[in-house]
Amino acid sequence: LSHDRFGLTGVAIVKARVIMFGGGYSFTLGQYSPVVDIYQVDSGTWTSASPFSVAHDSLSSAASGNIAAFAGGVAIDNN
View: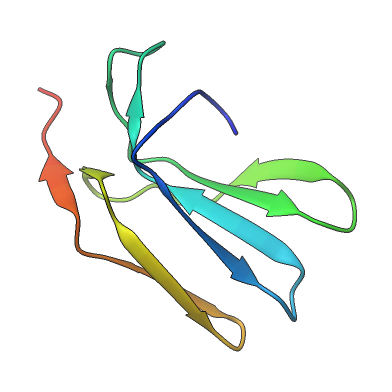
């Protein structure tokens, strides 16, 4: 992950062989995170997707085919 987080969600896209993680709270940063990290299973590398428009905690996630969806949780304004 790009930084420590708890309260995040994760979802696997089996055909694409990636695992995506999003949201959560970072003790290191001292705030909630809008970051979406992607783990590429075949290469063992991490990248980041476009962040959520607002930080979220306690999200839910699901995948169907090559589509991942993140929904619900609590939207957090860090300002």
